[in-house]
Image 1 (tube, rainbow, N blue to C red):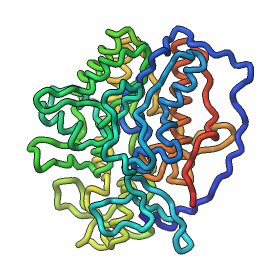
Image 2: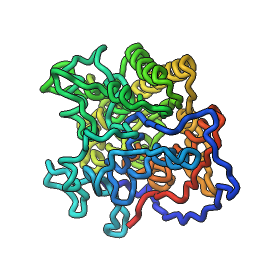
Image 3: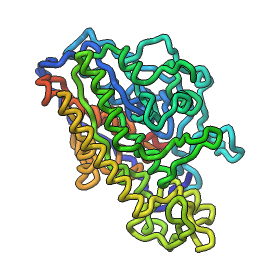
Image 4: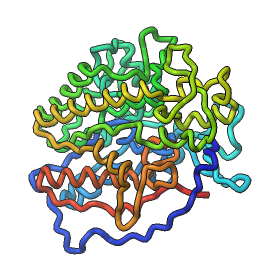
Length: 433
């Protein structure tokens, strides 16, 4: 995917000042880190560049793994086990220097004949990846929605099972049973015996709908099954409470994280009208024949760059499809639901006595003023901002390190622990050719 000439890429050389003191006395305070368990989705699993991969220790440096490494300084008995991917995993995006420009190369897709010669495909081990006999501490599953962590609500038993198996290879390390005797994600949480947890479930309850331009993405083969629809607020609240109740019943302590405003991430803010420098025609909404010129209140998705390169959006008779545009009405819908869900997360965490990491505010700070770590400035800009990976949605290694530091800050403040943060510059950013 070629990303217009607006991206003048510069390789930043990071010279970091050490932020950890030699005399730092670590302690767990009131917390018990002996069995730390992380629940969540792609952010928790360590997903970046459009896939879960570990060629350069990307997954090894997921934010839960970074947190666990710092917890271990105070609790040496902690043994944090991840379902580690081998090598390139399912494949991922990378950069290539072509014809005097740096271009983003998509992951190899076996269903296409137009793959770039350097496209990175899946590791040979990917097809059989995942040992369901191991008890893992990192339960992050890319693509999972909070409302699909247990059955009931809008999800029938068979739909639930399909969501975790047929439609999501990223969760193969967990045994979800079958259509007759399904094993839910909540069942795995119950078996974890966590003494401490981080919970960043909920992002996919909003993200999938948004990255599809406000599309519910029906599954033709399974009537009623929608992969990307926005989750119902009441159902979300009830099922989130069920997750926290399980942790409460096992006597665990922990931190819940709010959801960022997804419209502020690079995926939604890179292909702008200024960057295109031309009128762009869009199809408004998912089920409408309205075609109009895009304005500054609409968001063209990163995926719109391919469509524009193929000639769509240039004339009224060939507008951009709605799946690559989040129009102004859809932006209001997703921001409203995000705020509603975050209020529910804060309220339920308070009721159960758990801490809250306000990742929504953290992201707003990055967007509005930028953030500085170890003398280095970061912004939410695509590639050059320093914290996001090539997919424009997920962080890179440095981004995950900043997330880990924010969780650590909240843990120390709420539980009186004293575990050090990490030096962000010690982790990988984007790999340039």
